[in-house]
Amino acid sequence: MFKIQTLDKISQKGINLLPHDNFENASEIVNPDGIILRSFKMHDMVLPTSLKAIARAGAGVNNIPVEKCSERGIVVFNTPGANANGVKELVLLGLLISSRKVFRGITWAKSLAAGCDDVSKTIEKGKSDFSGQEIKGKKLGVIGLGAIGVMVANDAEALGMEVSGYDPFMSVDAAWGLSRSVKKAVSFDSIISDSDYISMHVPLNDKTRGMFNKEKFSIMKKGIRILNFARGELVNNIDLKKAIDKGIVEIYVTDFPNEELLDNDHIIPIPHLGASTPESEENCAIMAVDQIRNYLEKGDIVNSVNFPECVLSQSGTKRILITNKNVPNIIGQFTSILAKENINIADMLNKSKGDYAYNIIDIDGDADHSLISKLMDVEGVSMVRVI
Image 1 (tube, rainbow, N blue to C red):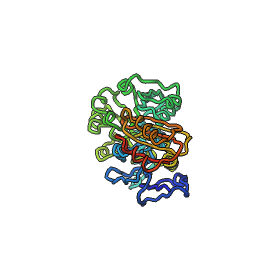
Image 2 (image 1 turned 30 degrees about the vertical axis):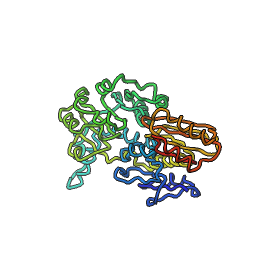
Image 3 (image 1 turned 90 degrees about the vertical axis):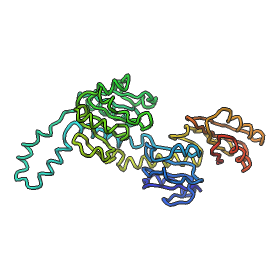
Image 4 (image 1 turned 120 degrees about the vertical axis):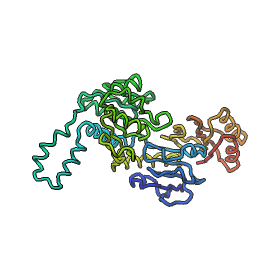
């Protein structure tokens, strides 16, 4: 019986996929095998020794101590693409409200309820203060062509925009889904200097943190409109506000507002609504549950941020799963131990991702505690599990 702890409210459509005969789940549970969460911050949490996997019902994993998990052999999953449509629709809304002053106009119109004698006349007189531009024919630069970026690019192109994309690490699957009309930018600087609008869809890491800064704002067109539905820290807020004061940035729409961004009429703060739809929450929960269930029951890894993708049809009577540091000659040590125990390997798969590796070894026979101890004693091994 596997125990699953939920650290946030997870859609029941996902939780219902855990079979009752093999899984127990609750928000308060002792010694969980797996954790499913959304935005709960785990960095100060003591990780149980029983913990084998964490599934984030969403794409970002900044709330999870990934490196600590990697050292312990705990597999961390996310759900890329599950909330893509919900975010994409909000990005399209961002395009429109950055162009047409609907946001300000609604606020002004509602203010007329307090003592205006002739609302219709006042609105006709004041509407010119809220005129804006159309997006058709304008240039949109999409930075990052993953699941969301591709959908944004395709739909913006369908709305009549001239779309360019930039992603040096674009996957083959993403390339297949991208419209042939979307142009490929040769560099980051070229796309941001040529665009009327920019929409960013890149992960937050040491290389991308503050990638929109004083230097980059200086080469943009005056009056550019920037949409950030990825991560707030991609933008240097101090440099952004200076670019707004200089007239370089006309509108900044962000789904990640903080106290620095609430006092400027050129900034439209949205309270992190990108994936706040029941459809997105259900899709993320279903994918997270599928991934953690398959890992616990079969040892398969799909969509892990810290270990490689490994899927192998089981061919032996037992399956040994091993996580370890990605160092030379470690596989030879595993096979040598098994040979000395007269255990035949029916099939095996070894893959690495950065500093860590994962092994699936199907054997003909049994794996007792003595064998597990010998495998654990190999330098660099962090986890051994038998299913």
